[in-house]
Amino acid sequence: MRNFVFFLFLVVTAAFLAACSRGEPQIVVETLQFDFGDVPNGEIAARDVRVRNGGDAVLVVEGISTSCGCTSATLAPMRLAPGEQGTLHIEYDAGAHGPDLTGPLVRQVFINSNDPAQPEVTVELAVNITPRQLSEGN
Amino acid sequence: MKRIIPLFLLLLALAPLASGCSNQAAAGGEHAYQLAPLHEMPSDVQNAPRTVREAYQFAVANPGVLHALPCYCGCGAMGHVSNYSCYVAGSDSSGQLQYDNHALGCQICVDITQDAMRMLDDGRSVDEIVSYVDETYSRFGPATPLQ
Figure 1 (spheres, rainbow over the protein chains, first blue to last red):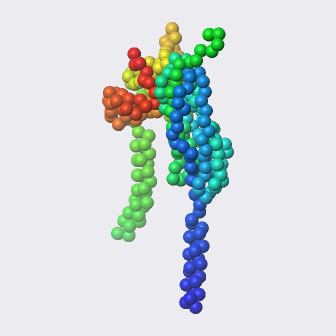
Figure 2: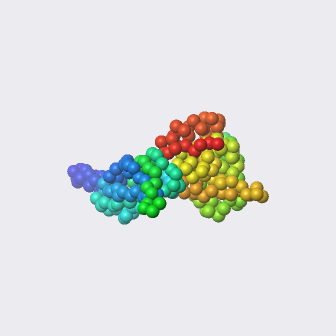
Figure 3: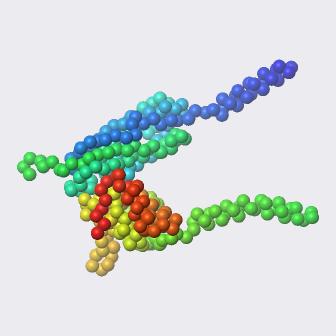
């Protein structure tokens, strides 16, 4: 009888622990920093960055924002099953601050998700804006 | 004695509520700066996220502070001369402010203003805020010329 009670106790404890240890999503971003290099003023530079769910629960990306109106970013899909991968498409408009801006800049993309360990991940991009290229006839 | 115990228990139960109220009062306490009325702002500003709305309100009510702060988003190339330019383009002949919508889409501009607001509340001087802004934001781009 005593063994049976002990066995029952183990079963209940195991079930309780299994119920408590629910999986968690984990956002894994291919790179947190990259450089577009030289981009002529007036042109748009773009890059795709892979975003993966390395956890064992569904990763829900709740929002994506950027540090500047000159930078846009979209992720598809916004919900990633465990092991699934999405594409973060980032575009930087080198002409957004007028035709005269040249030189090095840094911009940021913020990804907010339900990953409890990293609720916000920042991807940082560098760019060096060069003078506008004159088109033919100008 | 029998009457004191229930009274003591009642006070004990109310204590957390009272402390919660006092925390709320502190959180919504007075600022070291003024904010301009929101209803006088363009509808785009009124419908913007809270941090952006407050930054516009702060800019209009505290032009001296933002005239002293550079912006590092690269807007100097657009004719901006300070962080203030990201919010206000100037005024017309009747003195009516002409708003600039640049800060509606620029987190760097708004972050600089929000840092200024926070540091004023912390009792920091404008010179200290300028130093902080230079140190924190100069990596993002060139400074406005601060005329």
